[in-house]
Length: 302
Ligand code: CP
Ligand code: NVA
Image 1: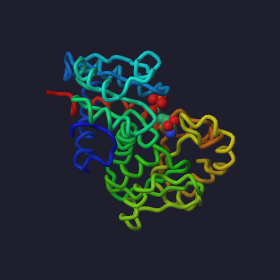
Image 2: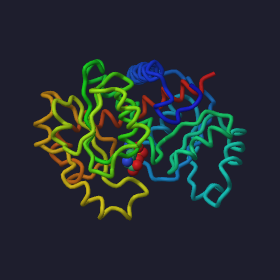
Image 3: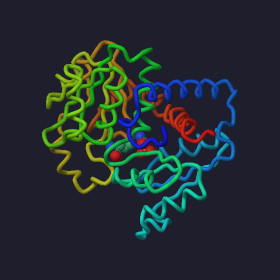
Image 4: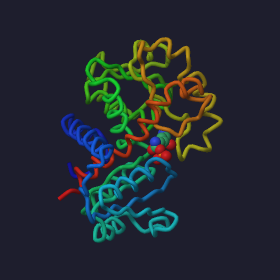
């Protein structure tokens, strides 16, 4: 593994290897036996969109591993004034040991990897959010013990989260169902890939049908970063695509609820469901730290 651009690039074994290391790093941190696995290493973090969890967990993670993280906003970088990725990637490769990028187009992250000579980590594009899904998988395994026989249900927009969860769930052996309105389906090529899993994959417009017997319910905002001007339109299109008490009643008895956050209470999830499942949702947020430390160790350790 040279980069983390999307989960589809990773084998099932590579995903499990990251999760195992993340568990180990979490244990070491808790017991104060953490080592400086990335002593002296430097990570650049380019943000072209807002972030709370990703920025803080990468920065703290790098600090805890003995390395250093630089926050690089596109408002300050020349890339924001039109310097091409080809040049930025080659320049930054001369200073840094790794680069984390949050941006719009997936092709930009791919280009950084193509033109640069250091590991590149996708910290969210319009297409994918692999770091989030690694933390999600880690949390599911913590709560459920294994992925075997589990069903994950995603309710809402066929966005970056849906794309990555679909791959993460199916690759680790879970069943995956998605309920989304017509016109808001996940990426077409990924859908074709998912159809190869037969009955383990289901797409419907019916939220309750998708949630039937689910062990993990997941949702995300109706309007992602960059879609702010579509807000009103999307509020109409996604009405009813919500995890609420009625949907929970269709799910399995001990179903857990996950949300990548930030959450919009009263839209994709009700306040009562979010608060009833706050423990797993905030464990999930914490696990961003451990999962990303594992990714950085896999990519940046000598
Ligand atoms: N879930 C997530 O990526 O959060 P941030 O946008 O706050 O980084
Ligand atoms: N789909 C959301 C995820 C935020 C973590 C967005 O892209 O804004």
